Figure (spheres, rainbow, N blue to C red):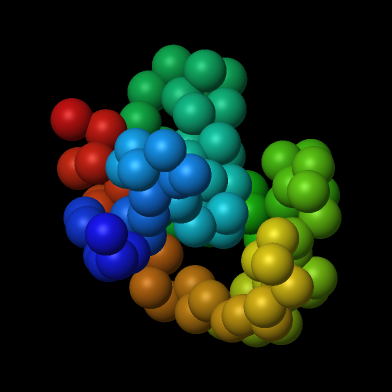
Length: 104
């Protein structure tokens, strides 16, 4: 069985041939920020509120230290595999929307 993409998660098979989903670490951080804001504020935070929280306080959520820095509209981060990546904050709205849909 070969790996492939399913629902924007990388789909792979472990040693026993059981399917497992690998998630994007940055997306997991976005979900953590959203969950914490929901807990703290009691309602669904706006995309702008989540973005401000990430820009101002990402260190509080980023235990794996994947975010190296934020410069203007771009998050520079490194995956657990050592791949250097960029994420444009202008893509945060659609990304959050997709992440919410995956929760259903």
